[in-house]
Image (cartoon, rainbow, N blue to C red):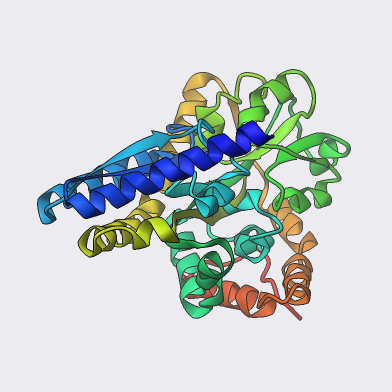
Length: 358
């Protein structure tokens, strides 16, 4: 344990020196950026590597007297999926990208899209609704800095969730007692089907389904294809639990404050641009994911509309319960959930069942 703490302290010192030296000498700045998920299968990470990083590098070189380079660590090489928030907080990472779903205690309320499933199927609509809530309720953004010493640079998400299984099923009753994996905040979706929810992570999914730890995954097609889940679990049912704006790109406050003002401004602007392009990026990967699954031989089917409506109705009390839970923790739960329901409605999306917090 002492050795691990020493290594982390050394990493923090090295990062701080790199940032400080770059700012002082006005030449080259080095930042560490990472994510627990790998680049490629996880769209939000691919957009960090393929959009955010090169865009910051380009703009800093073209618009300032500085240059910048990133030490990139994806796929848990620096911090795992449940460690990234803390790694940004303590400076092991200068910038981190992560799913809020793996911080169910610290970022409980930020998971609000999960608490109202069967929402927007289109990721552009979902990201618009999520951003509207953050703008309406500043507490969400302020919590990152007030409690975790970091700045929210941009939001991202997951494309529309469906269900993959190792065995075929025809009716919801067929899922009774079937063990299904998920990120955590989405596991209550399974209660209607009587399935057995299992907390898990994407990197564990393939082997767990292959060995029978569980027999299904609540998963969007981009990752279901990218992680090759169709091999152990070839039956993929389009349910439409909705796209979810639950990923964050954040930066250590000290690291940001240590940068030259013009470089810091570029990072802030590119962080927002990363968010702005997220919806279209996710939609593209939803489409290519489904097409790729078909080409790979997955058996794709569509749930009946009336079953989907019944499933959504079975979760009628879920948004209100989660709002009340957040209120009880001293968070603006009811305000956030109502803002989200209103923001989704403002996009023009029609719920299969219209939730109410009453």
